Image 1 (cartoon, rainbow, N blue to C red):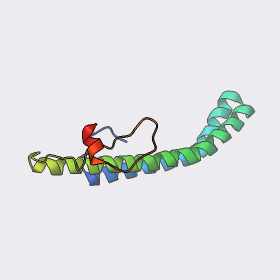
Image 2: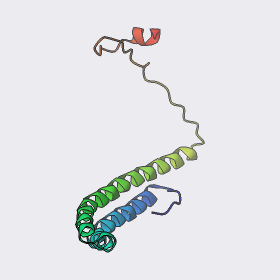
Image 3: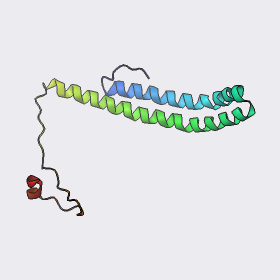
Image 4: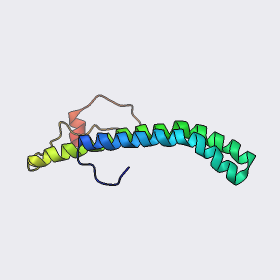
Length: 120
């Protein structure tokens, strides 16, 4: 996946799909390449080791691709959101709905108390 910056949702989905396809391709191609690679280096024992690596890769590489897909898509959503906020000149200020809950050292989680939250 290229190192250029993600500019929006569409770009994130496109780059995520590329990462997913790459993960699947590497996983499938590893079934052939890993045993052959290791057999050349270490002989029969290397071939067996390569088969084990290939089976791990056939699972791990696509899973990595799926995680990259979701990560890059979320990056694209974040970039679109940032652009959307930028259109309004960043005049948006966020305000707390309530103060943070007080969590005592040895007590179980209690019902929210505005008085304790302000006192903290």
